[in-house]
Image (cartoon, rainbow, N blue to C red; front, top):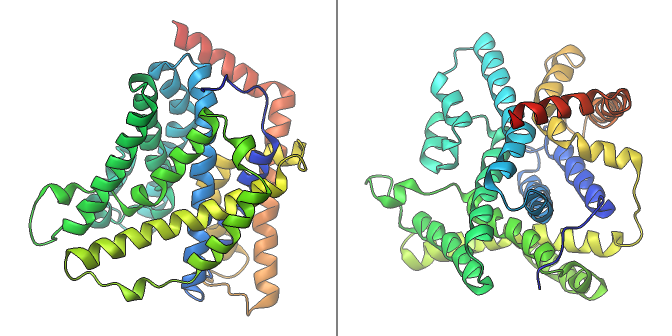
Length: 360
């Protein structure tokens, strides 16, 4: 049974989003080269959080706009795509100032073509901005399915088929030949598309209350422990079966790690973590935190730490100071600016002007 649109904010999802942001800060702490395996797994978890929350909240957002693709994507244009384009242009200009930069790099990013693996690999796009193009693609697929595919079993079948076909594209792709598999989407698609859709289906079918609880956490914890240990070295990319097993394991592992942490956190948080102004404000500016964090970190490293590119945990004092400054700006200054703008009516005036312009 499809649920009605949920009113009000869901407090535990704000807390979950903040957890994802904290993990993002940690992963971008210049520790990836020191602890690559651990950081890669944590990165999968935080990305899974963002896609899961986006999928869950997409239901309300879509139905609040009467399942209108035009209204839904007009909202995403202003709240997601244009901030993303602004960030991409900024980083391109900043990089061009420091070194020569290929304009095709910017074009691939803002055109969303970087979701295709060969284009992304060939132009070396801004890796830290990849999340939004994939999220917009996930939104597009989910909107089409929700609007035009009313049969639930068929909807699920199409999602699994898309996921499986892209998996096969990775298995059969031969870099020395130009085939349909050359147009494969990035591995990110297979890692997180189902996570996004699981979040959406959890909301659509009202499964949150039934599935999120103590029993689910008991199942999630051993699954997390089992898949934390990486056994991908047991597989090779030689031959169809080995390649298929490798990519299947790689994608399933990242999904289970992310979903396990999500369900354990929600089981603990549900009914215990209530609305909090600070947490809500941080969640509201999450897109700004995500887009500006690389530049803020760059400035801190250059202005305070003498241009050091690697600030490791072993350098205790510098590491703690670096993290404290990043958290202060991203989790302190940004939310305060948001609250100030909200109290002054700035956002209301902007929203009113946009509404008028859209209705003309």
